[in-house]
Length: 443
Image (cartoon, rainbow, N blue to C red; front, side):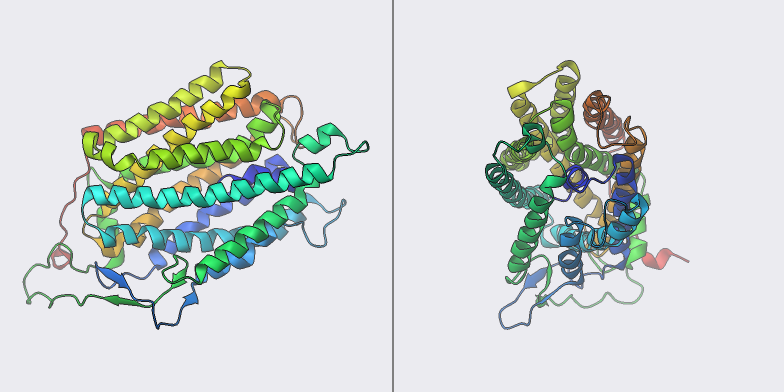
């Protein structure tokens, strides 16, 4: 729910659109987690939780303590409360949540190159991770649809304005509060299970072989200084910069399309608010199905062509939205296209990042943290730029924002998709190659 809840949250809590960008830009604090993450002592980690005391990780604690407050009314705020006061209230909770989310996400991603070395197995693990993420998102959107449906039933009556009941607004504040509490409760319950990604679970590692004799070069998978190895991978010719830009543009497409989908459905297409649950549900179902095709497609045509195929699907969605004024029922088919395309490019870009790490698994957290840095800074700046162009600065939405959100959806999918295609071309010219690095050769 993280990526797509921004628009719903602003609409329900009545946060003005131009003020939403600075809050979203707090996501750029996530990359601090990567360099601070401790290296894994062995490239083969075996969880051994039975009989071991299990405690929540700091990242999980941050999420549990901050997320409910983000989707709850501002305590002590009233109609006369200035906008800057509300931003100061929500800001610390958003920062705490983003830091905790990054701590769990980066540590979980960095396990992939630790567990497998085969390129196709990396794609399979990344696709399975995405598939289970989709299952969680579908559960959240299903709960959102149920809560909105129950709320609409309870408010049917002659005194209820139909337009108010069908549009997202401050009357839905309790729905999002209850949904956030439900999500946190389920997440906290799953966290106590052995092997949960948000837990610090006891682990037994295979003992590393004896260190090499003095004067000999270490083996390719040997431990290297965390920051030095990570920087070597990111600055290697034909490796880091291209993959970093490709991952950044991929995240821009995925996150911004999810963020502005609710406003596009509600204000541009004038659809009832239940569509903000059903349309993302279609997107996630489409992404879930396509994620199981990632391994065979990658194995058949390779990483680059797989990414290009997913990018073509995203560009097809952007063209459809740009040329069609009113989608109507066809919005479900367009959502299926966007979901499949986003799943393809996201899984493939994460697999490329794992390829960039290669055997240097000790620098995995640093590399994913650096990728997260470019991703979150770009997303925060993009949201602030889009919000600065909003045609209705003094109100939630006016007549001019109908076309505004229409072209925002075209730009964040089609425009950024073209930038991703240009970045992909550089990988065709300079493909990913790993170079060995000898720390003893440094002065």
